[in-house]
Length: 165
Image (cartoon, rainbow, N blue to C red; front, side, top):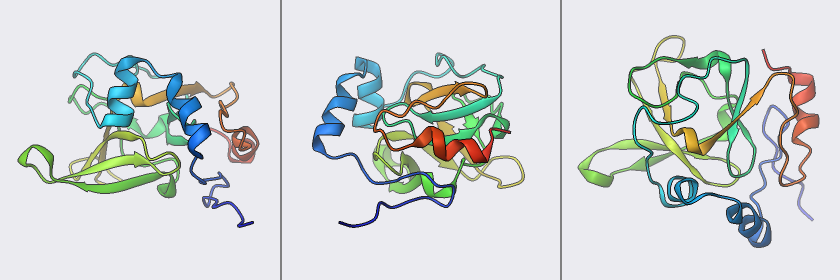
């Protein structure tokens, strides 16, 4: 049996199998499914995490993989939560997106391949990038809380030595 793919920060990036995926998808609301599974976009200025300023980690709503630390979030004025740096670069995939006659880079969760949003080259230092992410694609976990681990991959254990900053 192959060893699971792990990120530099210690998280198992092995994709969910068909049974796990079906179970994860069954817990989504209609809006979450539209965005995460069908590459939709929530309306601007409506997302529940847009104004969140608490310390913690923003994780993939579908599989629980940490995607962004709260300290990398900034106010972009676009109507969606924006971040300048991923939690771990290997946790976020960039896919060329030419839909709607535009050239953009779609961001997806590296573990479950769910749609998160897009990344643009107009962000603040240190990266100059703006990860524009749908609130419904994310789950916020406060610093003192344990990570949700819907796949039983040991995510809370992987997170412990890293801290939440």
